[in-house]
Structures are given as structure tokens and as C-alpha cells.
Length: 248
Image (cartoon, rainbow, N blue to C red):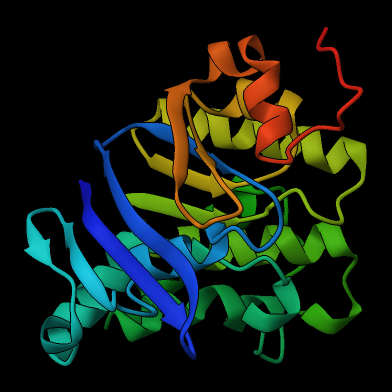
């Protein structure tokens, strides 16, 4: 589904990604781990088509994702429908007057009928336990509720893949574990899940595979999540754990 070959990206000549080569198959669940500033968020944005590589090749479902293909409005719209993106900061993503319109926005952009839009909204509210929130303003919701609404707004478009940037940040333990369980369930239902996180314990619950990034903006390792804590020296080297960390 996702194929990156020797991809690099820079912000004003400052490297954010260096020679990233990675393949993710349909239905996989993959977590990106690394210290702050290693390039995880940049890579997620690139995979969603929000930015394009400075060098190298990125393909989604066999199609090149670059400035030329993204300038095609129909192609770009189709990509963003199939690849849902949940931002790290929910306030960045939520902009409508109430929860109903927030969740309805994507289906309306897809050109669905009003009946279909209402059905999508109703089903998504029920899926995420948000029934009764339709008329509430996102600004007045708690952090966990905002995260659910942001997730609902993406899921209402029924994407094939779901990309989440640090989805556990700022959540209380109960909401964090709810979200982890929810992601496992929708992955089991066939959705491809890709996320970035710092939580070493939850990542093994959510993901089958982990990609570790160095502070030099490259990939240090790509391994099954069950093997994550087998190489403590590697985790220390890429600054994911304290030097005194000894594992379980």
C-alpha cells in the first residue's frame, strides 16, 4: 500500500528525513518511534500527501505521490479520502461550529447525499461513543473528547488507512487504553493503522511492527513489536529510554 524509496525532506535546508526506504502492506499496523525531532511527524504528513519528498520516490497503492499528481484535484481528493490523518493537536483539526458538522464535513466533500451524510455521522457517533454530542461545540470538549471527534471526522470518510500523529499525547490513562483497544479493533476489521508514539508499552499492544528512527532522521531498525524491548542498547542509542533503563 505504501512504498517509500530513498525519500528525503528538509525544512529550509535543515534535514527532517534522510534516505527513508519503507514498505507498508494493506492491513498492517505499524508504529513509528523515535526522539522528538527525529522526523516521525514529517514522514506521516508526507505519507498523507500534505507535503512531497525533496528527493526519492513515494507511491501509494502503486501511484506516485508528487507535486504533479497532487495538482490533480480528483486524485488528491481520492488520496485524502483513502488515507485519513489525525493530527497531534486536535484543535488544529477541528474547525466547525458543532460536532455534527465536524463529522459531516468529509462525507459532504465526497458528494454524498444528505441522507448518506446523516447515516455516516450517526454510525460514526455510535462507533466512538459520542451519541448526544451532535450539537456541542468542539471548543468546549475535553481533550479526550476532542480526540474522539477528530478521529470520528476521519473515520466518517471510511478510509482504507488511518495515520495518527502522537494520538496518545495528553490523554488520561482510561482514554489512552480505550483508544489503543479501538485501534486494535479497527485494524482487525481490515484498516491499515500507522501511528507515531513514545509509549513503549502500548505500542506492543497496538502494533505488529515498529520502525525506530535515529536523531539523524533516518531509520535505525524495523522489527516486530514483540522484539521491541530485546535490544535495550539500541533504545538507549536512539534516545528512546533513559540510560539507566534495564527493561522488564
